Structure formats: structure tokens, C-alpha cells
Image (tube, rainbow, N blue to C red; front, side, top):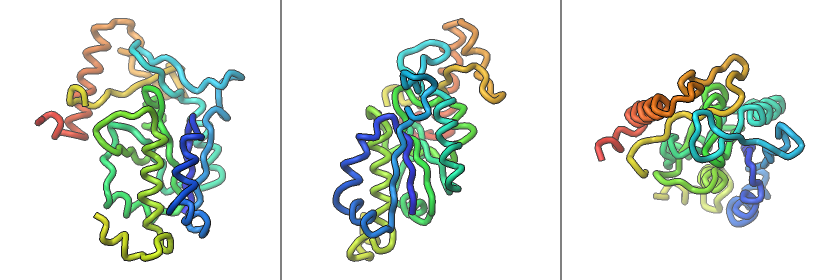
Length: 225
């Protein structure tokens, strides 16, 4: 299995992949993991890969252009079975999902950072969104490491006793709405007009409604709580 990981902090990926079972899997040639610094595809000489979000609000958003270029460059070299985005509002990661992913050949993981990635990347490139739980950490690198570890250890030959794996055992209760940043139009993909309106009341109402709809769709149990 081969796993590519896009990140803005590749150093966070090093230690978990360099020891124990993950090191063994790579030494045996059963798993290869390659990290890619997103700043290689930065939009300027300063290494910019993020920008302020449309509609205002705290937190920066990872931009369309660097991520799209990074993904497409990597896709020229490999055909990916899944393009995964690590995000708090993704599908809850569990053992059955790890089992399914372990059957794949090539996987690309996007480690989110800051406030998240531009929604258009999620709409047009990502095939699977994964969360490791109902909490927020500083970036998707730690979450990506968890997925790599959980999947990698299931590969045949990684564990000394392959039968071992067979016996292994939010703030307001709403998920975040979609986020967008510059440019307002990218490859014909438009930012919703309301976010460009400059009307804080309309923007807040839109975001609240989007949060409710996303929560109903993805985590209705949160609304029950």
C-alpha cells in the first residue's frame, strides 16, 4: 500500500511513522508513506497557502490553488482509490472503516489546518471525509497518523501474529458550515453570493442554517443531545 499525505507541517508526521509497527511495515516494503509539504505549491515566494475567509470570521482557510495543484500533480503519478480529508465534520473513523481502507492500494490524505480547507476542494477532489472524534486538535497531521497506523497494521505481514488484529477490540452541538476563501470564482466554481454580500446578518443566518442542515445530515444524534 502507498499513502501520500499533504501537510503544511510535515515534521509532525515523522516520529509516528519512524518507530514501532509503522517502521516495521515500511522496512518490510508492505507500506510506503510519503509526506508532501503544501508550501511547495504556494501561490507566492512567501509560501502562502492560506487566506482570510469570505464573509469574515476568525481563522484562516487553506486556499484552493495550492491544494488543487498539489492533488493534480500527485494524481499524475498515481491513481488514488481514495482522496481523504481529515476534518471534524467527517464520518467517524472506526475499525470497520480501517478494515475497508486496508484493502486499498493508493490513498491520498489531506491534513487540514487553520480553519479548514476551501469547500470547493472538498466538493471536487475529496472522495472521503474522516473524523477521529468530536473534538478539535491543532491540525490534521495527528489525525492522519492515527488513520495510517490503524490501517497500516492491518496489512498482511505487518504484525508478527496476523490473527492479533482480528481480536482488537462540540461546542453547540452543531457542525461547522462550509467555508470559502479567495478567489470568488475558481474553475467556474462559485462562492455562495451571500458570503460576498457584506451583510453580517444574512451571512450569520446562512451559516446557521447550513450548520443545522449539515448536522441533520451527518450527525443527527448531536441535535438529539
